[in-house]
Length: 74
Image (cartoon, rainbow, N blue to C red; front, side):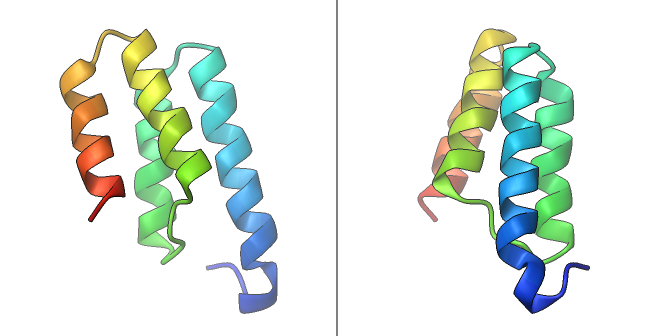
């Protein structure tokens, strides 16, 4: 689990990874990274969610994209 002072850099690292998955059309890995963020008690940012939603969209996973959108607004 990232230390409190390292949480900002961890958030950026996860978001960057999710964005890379989106660009590489690896929606499953993007979702896995979002799930991992929650497991380590790191709240995904809007950037993280948007990259995950876009990855799902590019992979034709519109239902998963909608689920992420709902989750983002909870």
